[in-house]
Structures are given as C-alpha cells and as structure tokens.
Length: 400
Ligand SMILES: Cc1cc2nc3c(=O)[nH]c(=O)nc-3n(C[C@H](O)[C@H](O)[C@H](O)COP(=O)(O)OP(=O)(O)OC[C@H]3O[C@@H](n4cnc5c(N)ncnc54)[C@H](O)[C@@H]3O)c2cc1C
Image (cartoon, rainbow, N blue to C red):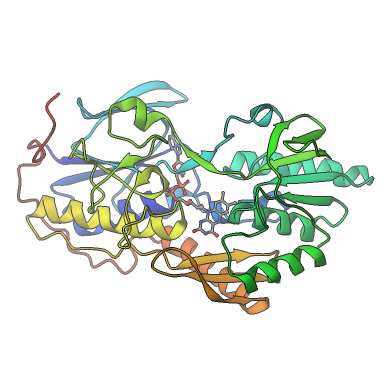
C-alpha cells in the first residue's frame, strides 16, 4: 500500500502543491491524486478580461500534469469526511469515494452575494470561468444591439476596479458605473486614489461613492440612500466566499467557513488535512490573516508541501515566509497601479501608476500562469522515501 495524498482543487495553490509533492516524494511510496471539477486551469486573475471579450489561454490539466506522476481525477468534490479520511466526488458516471492518508484542501472561493436580495438571481460575476463567460455573452448581446447599455459594477475592491476599467476600455459602447461603499479605492494611498479617479474619468466610468446596494433587480440596482441605477448588466464584485464543504465536514473553520490552519497549513482539528489558498484561514508573519490572493495561494501551498514532505520523510519542516507585499491592479490593458503595503497591511504612501505598472502586472500574470503550468519546475527531483509506514495513522490524529 502506498501513502495516498489527495489534493482538492487545481488552482494557484493546489496545482503547485501537487506538482511539488510528486517531484520530491518517492512514487514507490506515495500516490498523488489531483481532483478538479474543470479539465483546464482557470486563470482567475484574468476572468475580468474574459468578460471583456478577450481570448485567454486555459491550459489543459492533462498537459499540466503530464509526466509529473500526479493522477488527475476530473470530478466535483461534494463532501469530505475527515474522520473516515474519505472524499466524496461526483462525475458523469455518478458518485464515488476516494480514500486518503493526507488531504490538501485547496478548493478556492466563489462570489459572495452578502445576502443582498436579487444578487443570486439577477447579477453577473467574474469569480468563475462559467460566470465570466456568461457575462461576456450578455455584454456581446448588448453591444450587438448597438443602443449602448448600462453596466453597474458593485464593489470597489481590487476585482471591482479591474472589472469596471477593463469593461469600459474594451466595450466603449457601454456606460459603466462603479459603486463604492466608501471613498473610491479607500485602501489605496492618496496618490493611487487620485490616479484611479483620473483613470475612471478617462475611461468614462461613473463613480458612485458612499453608497450601499440594497437590492438588485433585472434592470436596476437599488441603493440604501434611495438612488436607483439603471442596469442592463449588474456585476457583483462585493466579495468572495468559500465553499460550504469544509464547514459541513466537521473540520474547524472560521465563521466564514475557511479552514483554520497552524503555521504549517495543517488543520488545527484534523492533522491529516492541510489547507491552502483562499480556503485556508492562515495567519501571516505580521500576525494578520492573509488576504485571499494569488500570492497567498502560492506561499500557503508551498508551506503545505514543505510540511507534508518534512513529516512524511522524517525531516525538519522548512518554514516558508508568509508575507503580503501589496496589490497589483490593472486598469485596462494600458494602465495600472502597484501599491505596496507595510507590515500592518496599510498602503505605503508611494505607488507606481501608468503603463509601467500595467507592464509589470502583465509580467506577474505570465509568471503566475507559467508557474502553475509547470508545477514541478525548479523543484529538485528528490523522490524521498517515506520514513513512516505508508498508511500509519497521522501523528496526533483526532479519533473518529
Ligand atoms: C477577476 C479576478 C481577479 C483577481 N485578481 C487578482 C490579482 O490581481 N491578484 C491576486 O493576488 N488575486 C487576484 N484574484 C484572487 C485570486 O484569483 C484568488 O485568490 C486565487 O485564485 C486563489 O487561489 P486558490 O488556489 O485558493 O483557488 P482557485 O484559483 O479558485 O482554484 C480552486 C480550484 O478548485 C476547483 N474547484 C472548486 N470547487 C470545486 C469542487 N467542488 N470540486 C472540484 N474542484 C473544485 C476550481 O475549479 C479551481 O480549479 C482575482 C480573482 C478574480 C476572480
């Protein structure tokens, strides 16, 4: 019997972790299975570009994992039973169970409707590939009508800013409004806020500030102060939520359902489970929770891989830095903002804006995609043997 490692979710966190483990652990002792719902890697960082109608590469997971030794299982995860150490999956052939000895939970996140009436029924989002494509098709149909149309983007976090600017630049026939609960770009430095405001002006975006949305209807958005915004397409970018699978499983989770992990990304309630990326509630080196982000997915995934390799092969667990340095925000294809943050996660006064920032952001996107598409690149091929019996109960395991 081999030690069975099952990785859930081939996103920025999971794909890297699976490739890294396959490279470093002996295939004689371990069997690594990657479970993912979609057959391609979804480059979430570019889904606003997908909605804007741009062609975005989506590498096939069979290519990504070819030759790595990782077994790919295309299926939707529907449940995890950490006390029995099994995962329930569903695919076109029905339901099945996968047993594991070590689990890496990296199912990412999806849009959060924040309980606002009408969002689930009438709003679009860019949090997943299918929903971004659906928004793109709807905007195509508005564009084709040739009568213009109103797009309301709700939420001025990074995703809302990137979405509003991208849509306004790529689809100039549409009128785009961006709704902010407070001041536009409140978490940016003063200079970056001014830059953002100028970019919105240049792109013809109507900025609606200090406004909370109370309901979304088919053709309008209703705000708490009585403002009514006409909308042919409402795009909800007011936050991300994690899948309820973790909370339902009995794993210790936060109020919002993220898995609580220790410094090594191991579940604090079930030691055979690790979590990484958006699904994990991990505390950074500054003592603050890491934000849901591509950078955090990378560093938490690397830490989970280090911890698993270390523990299974009897080595010291290496520490991977968990620091969040800042935000790289695209404002369409020709403008951007790089805003670094301090140790308290506050925006530093300096920022970089303009074409150079846009080019750096484009470079970061390329590197992130390349890294995920080559999950074993740069990882020394060690193929370490396990020191414990392959199916020995994990140290400190919570009794079923
Ligand atoms: C439009 C947009 C722009 C963004 N821009 C930035 C940015 O500029 N910088 C930044 O740092 N972050 C950005 N983010 C956030 C970033 O994309 C996420 O933080 C990151 O993707 C998290 O990585 P992950 O591996 O945890 O999850 P994901 O990348 O979401 O991967 C999760 C994987 O799990 C799979 N999956 C989910 N549920 C199931 C299931 N039930 N069964 C099987 N498989 C499943 C999914 O198909 C996916 O492959 C952006 C997000 C969006 C939507």
